[in-house]
Image (cartoon, rainbow, N blue to C red; front, top):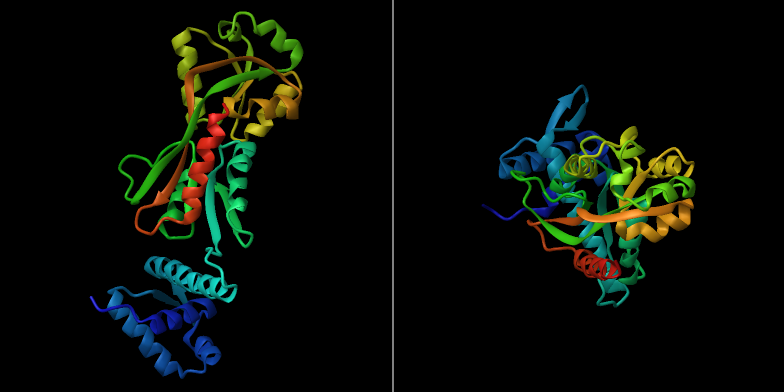
Length: 300
């Protein structure tokens, strides 16, 4: 296969950005005929068409979106190179884009990601929070450098990526002081028939906690199910019931919400993974965060 012509990639990027060959040719001071011919050459080389015509506009198809994401990273790396050389720096001046699954506690994400700012003064952190499926899709199309998740890459996933274990810890259970005092002595059996807030259905914590209750032969009364763990903590703070959180954030939960610890268990283990793509040189921030993450879990 012939080497990619980066001029063709620039022409394609201009058409994708402006939505038509006419507008792009105007901006680039190239005739529409020349620009159209250059696009055809790129499509022939790639073996795919990149646009669909809708009226007078050219709209990216699926292969076009993938190509655009690569083009944007190529141009971004070029900008970073110029920035680094301009500052006569051997450090890598860069942006780091990471996805965080929406089930991970915000305070853990903060404690983990803040290490990024010890790398380089010029770093820009871009963080997106949503479901793992969506984040893996963006990792596959090169929109993200890594994903922080409570589960590894699903078995059978077509995405070529590594699941690096950041650390693991047990679960802690909390409640308002008045309720916590009643439940501390005979924990975890004391949770039987007590009001309990669980994580959203389908989450790793939801499944593991319910399985643990079954093994113990106890049946807490599930009075709330929340995708947002902070909401569960507010209800627990107000005295409505018991909630749980990863042991690594014990101190924060007690100080921030004024609740008391009922007990801890290591029968349920919360894992944290940093998923990074296999197809590219690992972003230096991935190695830095993995080192920082290990130190974070050493304190548990």
